[in-house]
Length: 265
Image (cartoon, rainbow, N blue to C red; front, side, top):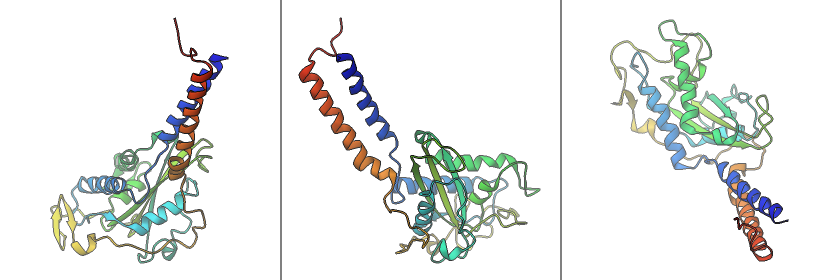
């Protein structure tokens, strides 16, 4: 009997550990925002050959709201409203998108996800402006005229459609203005870095106070009919406290009725 109770107690502890591991950042998480912007600009400033017109990228709240709304559907496919910009963003006339997914949820890492897109550079030829394999995620990341990004990550406990039936994570980034225009290079390279900048140059990226400023939007896409709460926050606010309480109660019961349950010779 004691061994059975002991196993139950350890199961509770493992449950609590598992719940902690699925805590994911929200779109308002400043560290998450900083990391998304940092990784994108690092890739943009590192292109070869150097870009003469690469704009510095900053966060956009509405793009993140749209990314979250789509990610909550847990579908490994592009947003079906991408061609209707007015349903993707209140201002921009075109929006691009990158998607990354993985399971189990513990595999998620913001920098790792973005670097997976950037790693497609090995399959891209700037001279030929062509791909050996998939490289559209990379070209969107380094598209010179794209200067706003908004990302979101979503826990999908029942699986991700078109990808896995296992619990996983969906990471979506939306971009404005959209890149990957057929027949165009992602950036210009004639001359030195920032040669075509109308403002200042910082780390080989063109900066402008007006363009780089961030705005707040009282807006959400009209197709987002889901509950505004997310599994990532629910798991922390509800599941973990319940699991912890159950663990403490079980430990007390074990100690009270079986004081020697964990004694070994």
